[in-house]
Length: 101
Image 1 (tube, rainbow, N blue to C red):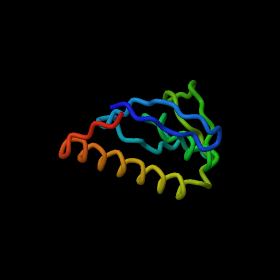
Image 2 (image 1 turned 90 degrees about the vertical axis):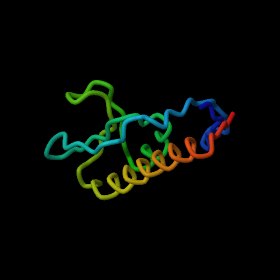
Image 3 (image 1 turned 120 degrees about the vertical axis):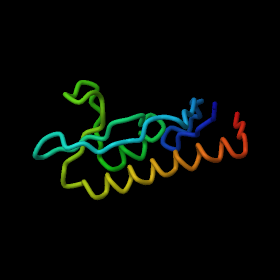
């Protein structure tokens, strides 16, 4: 599904393709001091950046967003919210045949 998203930081809009069947985001222990969020994060990168995440495409576990392990609770809350949102949008698109353009 194509949707137009307004980037509040830049004031520009962009079109994104939403994949409601995308894998859930996961929080992975990366090291003693770091955790990583993996999965399809593209649509939510602004929220992830606000929490202090830094994108790294060359991690041992694949690409992802790196956070201090001190932020685990905040990061896990955001990941739960994103996964719930994706699940609800997936159900809504099936039940109501959403066609957002």
